[in-house]
Image (cartoon, rainbow, N blue to C red; front, top):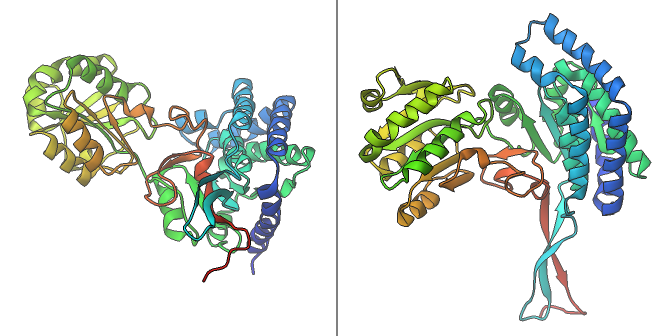
Length: 419
């Protein structure tokens, strides 16, 4: 066994040993740990920023792009935001122990379901050091232990933040081993983590498509993931023009580099003449490059010709693909063929078509007359999220505290026996 394998197995054992204590921890203890960690983050702001400066210097020396470096940088405000985020998680209702659906059976027993932690959650992520606090906070509040493997470019930052989490747990009388930090940049550590199904119950990748594909392919335990977000807005034959303009502009331009941003706009042919020219002007004002089908370019001459690759692209940039479709059937078929099962929306005043869109579009979030940018744990009332899942099992869509738990059947009897 290699040194890395021994090291990772040690982390796994410690996390597995800590998991039962986290599962039975009282809500007050978990909240106290989060509050203590928030206090430590603020008290050690200078120390955390000093560690972060080493990561930023290394990233610049390695020639990493400006966007990645921007996500890597920790300012005083970003450290404060991590602390606020932990306090917000502490304020959320604790799902653990909740019993639902308790009902009497003809035999006289009562049967219900109790919400319980998953156990040990592994998180593999890139670039943003704030994920260390955010993801760990959600795991701890939901009664789980967690093993964190951040990107090598943020090793110093993640370690400094992770120490605060471990000390916050200890201050609340909980096992510090409930937060395991992978403190090596060796990529073999990721491979080992993906194979640690004896210790890890769920793996959550947060990063680019390459990372998520690697984890989904190699992991020996369940993975909570989405590969990419090819999100659509369809402007129906019965779309209100003002709503269509507002939703289609916001869904693309409110923020470009996130997974719930619209990447393809579909427009019913009967409305293309009325809707596309004003939309094109709005996109031009925002500096959005348009790539369209021939019918789109008939209405927007300056749009570039869309290729087959554009229909399946997640640009994460001010670029938008536009296609004119015959109607709802063609829109649904396009989404089924090119979509990523993330978030898709229809703008329409037709109740029947809206219901068909909701039923037939197979995505984790489906919307009527609303921007795809609402696909977010905070906006859905979850308080926070560990990510968005496009899988169909266990959790789907934005994943908050409840998504990091499972349910088991519980039975109450009074000496009942089965005849």
